[in-house]
Structures are given as C-alpha cells and as structure tokens.
Image (cartoon, rainbow, N blue to C red; front, side, top):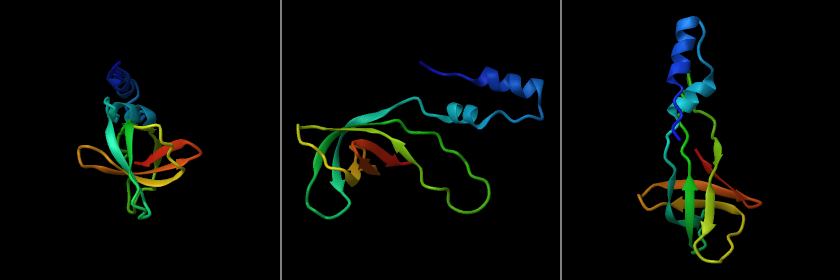
Length: 117
C-alpha cells in the first residue's frame, strides 16, 4: 500500500506558506517502500570463528538531514532476524553480511534485534 502525502504537503504550502510541514511528513515521503529480505551470515564482533546462517528483514529508513556541523547521533532501528536452522543465537553484537555485499552492525538484547542506521 503506497502512502502519498504530496497533496497534504501541497495544501499546507498553499494555505500557509510561512509554515513548514511537520518533520514526520517529510520522513514518510522520503521513506523507501521496499523491505530488504534474504539470507545472510551473522558473525559475532569478537573473533570466535562462529557464523550463523540467518533469514533477515530490514526496513530501511529515509535519511534525515542534519543542519550544521558534527556527526549525527547513531540510531538503532528494529529488524527481524531468524536462524536458518533450529540453532538459537545468543544475545550480543554482530555483523550481518547480506547477499548483495553490504554489512550491517546489529545487536540483540533480550531477543530484540536492532541495526545501526
């Protein structure tokens, strides 16, 4: 289901040109519509020699531009990770190597998976 808020943003601009639309509207407009799913390798950040084969699902967020200097703060966003086998994956910090060559830094705290956006 595609979300189009362009008419809402346009009406805000026309009715009150001095008002800027709320940030959440811009975030929704910039948000990609596709979820990245597939099979990848989950490798602990500490060199243990262990690899887990996993199924993952990542919903990439739109970029929020920061004005001024400095680096933006690191944001941790949710993702889904399931073991390809019945093997249980312990909590900790990992690197997720996905099939197109990208690498994500992920962490698991009490079964909740997050990636650094």
